[in-house]
Length: 192
Image (cartoon, rainbow, N blue to C red; front, side, top):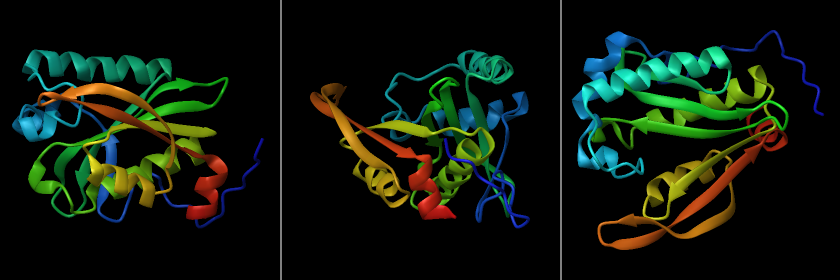
C-alpha cells in the first residue's frame, strides 16, 4: 500500500487549468440535450441511438443514487472562463476492496473537441481518484477508430493492457475495443 502525504501546496482536484468539475444538476438537462444526440457525439459513446430528455433526466437521478452509494462519481465539466457546460466525466463501478474503477468522459459539442478540455478534465478526475478516493487503478475502454482519444490517453499516462477483438460494430464494420489503465505509482511519477 502506498502511503501519501498531501503537501500544503495541494490544489483542489476540481479545478483544472481550463475547466472546473462540479456536481451535475437537474438544471444541466437543457445543456446536456443541446449536443447529446448528435451523431458526432454519440458515435464514441457506444450508444449511437439518441436519448430522450426523460432518459437523460433518469440518468441524472442515477448519478445521485450512485454517488450516495459511493459506487460511481460523475461531475459536470465546465469551462472556467465562460462558465459553459461542456460535458461530464466519471469514475464508475468503484471497487473499494481492490481499489479500482472505470473512467468515462464525454465532451458533448464537437466544436469543443481538440481544445484541451478533455485532457484537463481527465487530469482533474485522476487526481480526485488517486489522491482523494485512494484508488490504486483506473481503467478505460476506447474504440480503436477513436485514435484521437487513444493518443490523449497515452499522453496522460494510460497504458495499453489488452483488447476486446471485433467487439464494437460501427458503420458496417467491427472494431476492437482497446483496454487501458493507469496505476497510482504511475500517476505519482507523472504528476507529483
